[in-house]
Image (cartoon, rainbow, N blue to C red; front, side, top):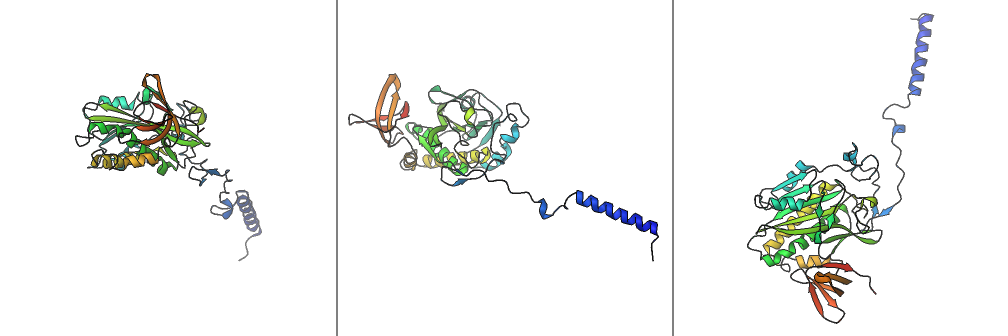
Length: 348
């Protein structure tokens, strides 16, 4: 059947119009030409383990301080997301295991002070985490400060019990240091070392910098509160002092705080259980050997600044059974240091 001429003209015009629309709209969804072009490769970096660092510029877990994520900005959660408290509890609080409670607060003065104030009413294994600390403390009453959600700021309540002599409780901060250093190496891919007694060191541009610290304090007669502070995503401009560092500046493969916190607490649980099962014996538990193996202070010339404005200069040669640093002095003797500030010196 032959269509009328007028109808044929209308259909022809409709076909031409549809063809023009399809061309101007571009290829259909699913066409190969719509594939996202490859992202230009970033300059290859190097992690502390010597592997090429991945391109993390598009990773939302990597904190980059910009005008969009300043305090109060609606973009903050994208750059520095809050900890996932329900998921952390599901993964860490298991009946019959060490951790019995885990609370995350938006901000507090000091997690150590808060947990110590409640030590009489809380069971062993209570964990308090703050997204921000406004009056954090380190050894020798030094201040510890960092932007909100830029690190891990937590305290744990431990009761070593009657099976561990009180004189061995001094190993708790060193034990925690081993646990934190191991966790950071595994979860963040950052090579770490310990500066006696309880500083966590990372390499930033070939320079050793402090990225974390530990503070243990007695709470009541039978309890110890151990505080952990760790700089995770701080940028250079956010560092509190020039000698500080962070995992991000040390080329961490991840600055996701949730798996990092899980790794830290599981590490503390492992070493604490091993140490307590050995009645606090650092040699029998393997703790003394593990600490010495990861201690950057050993084998170096040091200056120990002791109470009473006394100084001791020599080579750090060992960690003794009480957790003290043994220094071989220039006069040929040895002295064990249990308290004080130790400075790493350059070899002559």
